Amino acid sequence: MRVIAGSARGTRLAAPRGMRTRPTADRVREALFSIIQSRYELDGARVLDMCAGTGGLGIEALSRGASTCCFVEKDREALKCLRQNLLATRCAERATLLEMDLLRALPLLAGRGSRFSIIFFDPPYASELYTPVMRSLSSLELLEPEGLFIAESAARAILPEREGCLVRSDRRVYGDTALALYVLGEE
Image 1 (tube, rainbow, N blue to C red):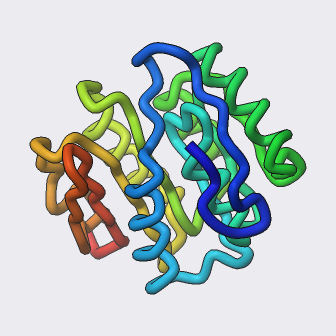
Image 2 (image 1 turned 180 degrees about the horizontal axis):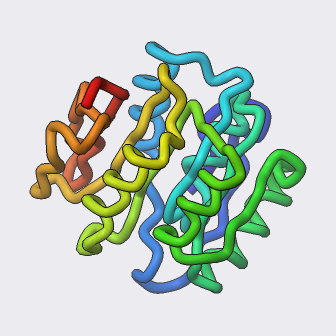
């Protein structure tokens, strides 16, 4: 796994051993960022990387010009690799780490008045987090009005077309990985 483009291009990213953390494949990240950059401006974007794992998505965004990224992760081994990756890519000064459960982190971020241009969500595929997280994002207003929420899942899993004010605008499948892109609509 490596950073594909931007200031940290080519930097290899550390990942924990075993299958507990499943980093987004380079080809999927490359396709995702091609989609993002064809529709949105990454320069100056505020990014939230939920279930961040090694931080590959958030670090890629920082490398391509995002101003800040908040990473939410609770696994100790993944956090160790995430810190190492932030240092290796020289992105640590623009990063915030929340070492906690995601469903506790979201109200905390909302309470701080945080709003994000782009939100990445890449939980373990078998997790039951998709619906509760989407409901929380919708009710807590963490996504900016012109923002983008991207949920990664197994290709066989079909995420809802709408959850609260989040409306699916696109879905792409790459092998066994699916990316669902959401924008804000009216409830």
